[in-house]
Length: 179
Image (cartoon, rainbow, N blue to C red):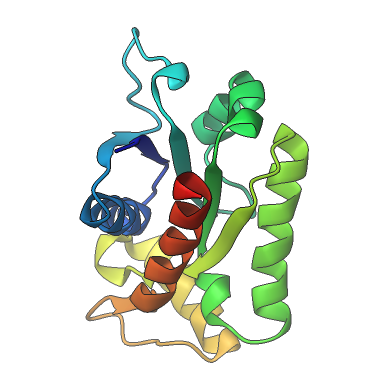
């Protein structure tokens, strides 16, 4: 049994749900998991207490959460030394062609910026969470969705997450952890 940290940063909560799914898959493989919001790390926290880590962050305005970036920079040596994986949640990942490529470029740029090279990485489609947006953000997101060919019904949220893909991503991490 390994001790695994699943750390996440989230805006509207979809990355937290995805991180929870990742944690569930890891537990199903018999490992002990700590699920932790990256903005709520306890003062006595030590990454060295874990055998592996999965980090997830969402993209907003072309960037991941600052606190996830700071965590990765501060812990870069340990991240490089242990089995690790990173997933990036973005509505652009639900798109085709250049949309998805842009999301991948943000993920790769983030990893380059923080000096971390996880073998397992993924861009995961998120949720168009109209119900959680204020009037201005809802209006802007609807315009963006219309241009991208996405859902424009603001009376409900639209989830694009590929849960089977998230499971495959987690299993790829587990191969490295257990291998």
